[in-house]
Length: 260
Image 1 (cartoon, helix red, strand yellow):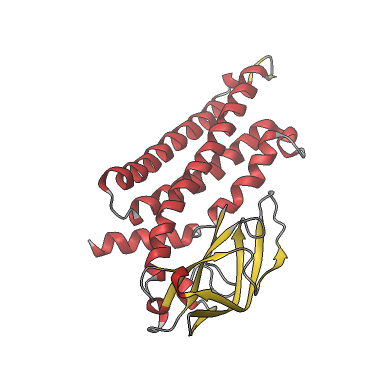
Image 2: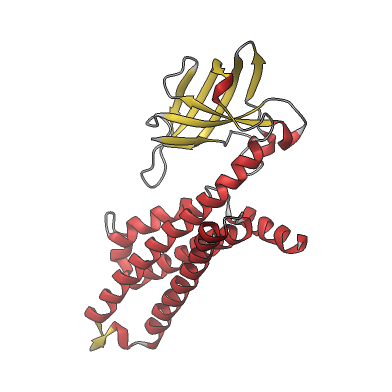
């Protein structure tokens, strides 16, 4: 099992501000610093680690490494509890020796590799959100056809029909954006920075809207602990933050459009 060790306490959305260092020494690098919000942290077999190697200022001075989880100097500083179960941890590196051959690509090219990887991650986060939204629609459709209000099924109420229509529309639009990003990557073999950002932004934001509608349709049951839509409500929130917050995706999309 792998983990992607990129974010730091003061370098989340601003990756180029990372402070973890990999100082060149004889035979490799000596790593010191900290990473946080690392998915699979503490259970991964190895980490893809990004650290500042100093070839140039900012993003151009970051390199990528493969690090075995049992490497001396690597420790799990904290396991991070969140509103929906997810294995997250803060990692600490203290004089951790990484062999030269464990560096990925050329020195100083780590930032580019990280961004290309995030293009793929973002599409999959959008796909996860799509799955959550589809479950919310499924639960809602069953509810409104079987629950009666004022002598008729809830589905007969036009306001309820509007909610269902909005959910279905957002789900299909999200699917098309996600499929486009995946197809472009698989078939054209090109970077999908714009496509992935659009897929993640739209799918996660609108999945949250769909799930909120589902909670409203279920009323009190929708906020009862353990109910399917209550679980979805907790699960969806983090997807609008990790692998690049929604606001960051808007910046990426705008930059891609303006550079054309």
